Structure formats: C-alpha cells, structure tokens
Length: 126
Image (cartoon, rainbow, N blue to C red; front, side, top):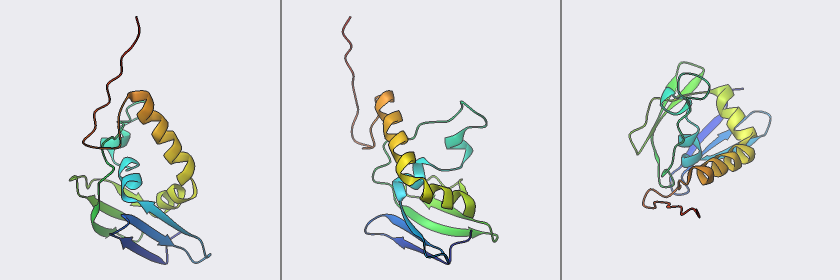
C-alpha cells in the first residue's frame, strides 16, 4: 500500500507515513536505521544479520523515491544503501512495537547500547 503523504519531522526525528485508509505511522530515524533492509544490516542470508548499535542520534538527511515502489533513505551516519519498499515500510509501521522490543532485547543480550558514546562492560562471576 503506497502512502498518500510522507513527512520528515526533523525536530522529533520521525518519518510520518499516511495512508488512504486513514492509518498513519511515525517511525523514528533510529528505528528505520536499525531496521534497514540493506545487506549491510540484514546480511546476505539467514543468520548473517549485523546488530546495529549506537544509532540513537541518527537523522535522515535525504529521502529519494525509487521508481513507484520504494524510498531510499540516507542517514547522518553515512548509511544510504537500504531501499525501503512501500510494503516493508507498512510492515515496519504495523509491527513497530514488537520489532522495537525485540531490537532492545538483542541489544541487551549483546551488551550493546543505543547511545554512540556509551560502552557497556559486563563482569561475570567465575
């Protein structure tokens, strides 16, 4: 489903997608960056995903249409290889809460942080 309106809210760092059925989603730049459909993030097959961390302050610096089926988002950290199809953006919007929670859990398990200036160190009892 193609959005009828797309707005980048720079202050809140959110991309808003509005649809003809009345639904709308506001997706944070960080959320979109860590869920990029690029091979850099997803890998080239199952099990090759690369956990993105330190992206809390990332911004979208450019939005370019890709034909009639997608957007290419360029981020302030230099990432610009993800092609976000209309169906993928809709999927992200509809599943945002579950996807975000799963991402936070993966970060925790990896001992990583959303904050680019924070390093997590774990001490284990022997």
